[in-house]
Image 1 (tube, rainbow, N blue to C red):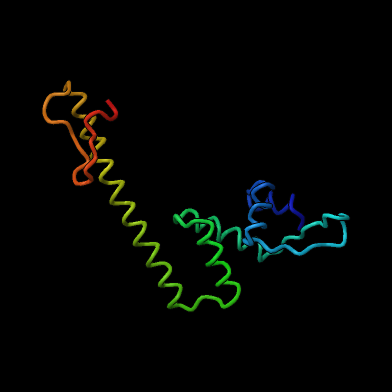
Image 2: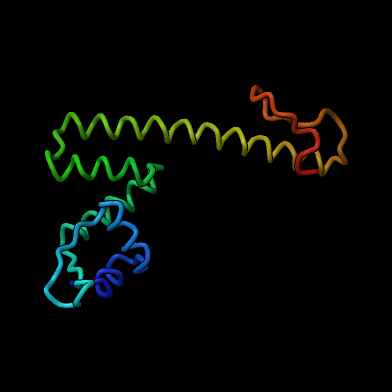
Length: 138
């Protein structure tokens, strides 16, 4: 399929598709048409790679990390042990982010309560981060 159809199917803009091609995330073949700039033809493998990128980004991976994993997947595949290792690493990262978000949620709730109370009592802080939050978000 050509870039317009691939773009439509994946929900990615043409510019994003071209960028991902330059990064090596997509590996379209080229046709004899198009003159000096032959048409790129995208395959189902590229469509799968687009899904890998989407999932990887949602898990917090950088494009560089996604590219490395995609290269590994294409060249050697993933053993169940390797898949488990990758997923455990991502789970640890997500759990750390969740803990950080929980801390921020507690801070914002305490800040709301403090503001509603007219600023009486001790000012809420983020705890052990060492941040000076006294002047923030007032």
